[in-house]
Amino acid sequence: EVELVESGGGLVQAGGSLKLSCVVSRFPLGDTFDHYAIGWFRQAPGKGNEEVSSIITEDGSTYYADSVKGRFTISSDAAKNTVYLQMNGLKPEDTAVYYCAAAGPYRVVPRPPEERVYRRRGRGTQVTVAS
Image (cartoon, rainbow, N blue to C red):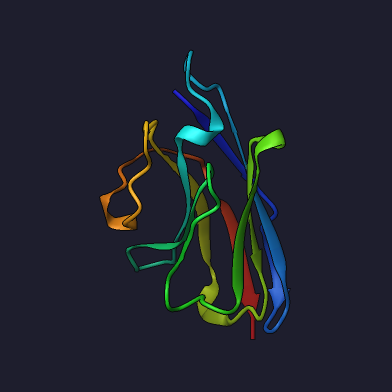
């Protein structure tokens, strides 16, 4: 199954920026980057998982949670099998462990985000926003 590895977390002041990367590898035979949707999730202490953003890698269609719209941008680079999350205007409430996850493989990735099933995830990277 696919493997996902995140990087780019750290400590930043409120209003600052970070860019997270998620490298996807170990595709099963016959599968490629384009057969997946990649999502970024976060989990803060004492809170549940939140899907922050996701992207259908084949066509670049994106989803954003209301809490990050206008501040975060998701993108992908098929040549590098990598999905990025550019986070601007960070707030203390964005503090969490961020991890990426893969939904698929699909012949056709479901467009509604709620219909995607995420089966693999990375270990996560800590993002801390100081006030």
